[in-house]
Image 1 (cartoon, rainbow, N blue to C red):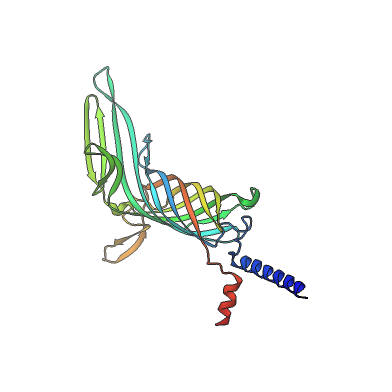
Image 2 (tube, one colour; image 1 turned 90 degrees about the vertical axis):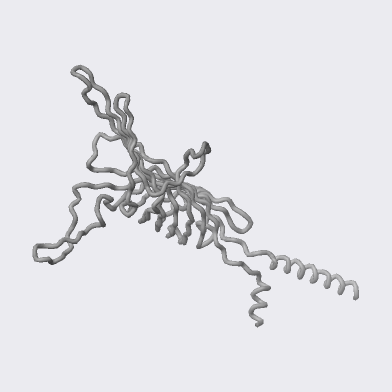
Length: 299
């Protein structure tokens, strides 16, 4: 009688210990194929390289060499079933570089080339709100997910230019303040260099962004590290040649003031093409086992 009783007790004890071990395990995360980012919310770090120019409608036959800058900042994203909405705060270096050549008469039978280069760099703080659509199901288990996105963006000029250059015989960041536009002119054996300050208020830009990319995930214990690589085109909507935005204030002969639309005979717009890499960490709610829920209901 005692032997069967001991056997039953041992079986019950074994089952109980096994159940306790199961309850202590964290709840499993959503499968990769059912959730874009293993979490509804994510935060991350973005690094990129924009190639930027300032297009001037009054200039023709100009070579726009552009400025290769940098971007770094933080991103946050709210995911839904197939799309997401985010917000990004970025620190970037933009600018422009252009040149042109023109023949001029040296003598009755000889001509030479007049060459001029223009360069300007500046830093901006940018805010953008991207709306992204993800093509789920394109690849097996959504290990790689293509996506497209659009975003409004505002570039606020910071009044200085931090660029990589040489200073005191060392390579590093060189700070230029106030902003300076550089003009280099050469003709024959003569070279002339000029510098002129730039009003940073004129560089305030409102842009429209559109791009595409791919998202990949590296699974970790109960979560994942997400990598996103994308390319985008950033079109400047604001005319930087205006003293303001769309309207201007005028005064008639009677001293009455009114707002009228501005003439846009001359336009200067900021455009750039960019490539970015973003490292994203999901924000997950703390998962509790059944024992925790049972204890919380007791109080």
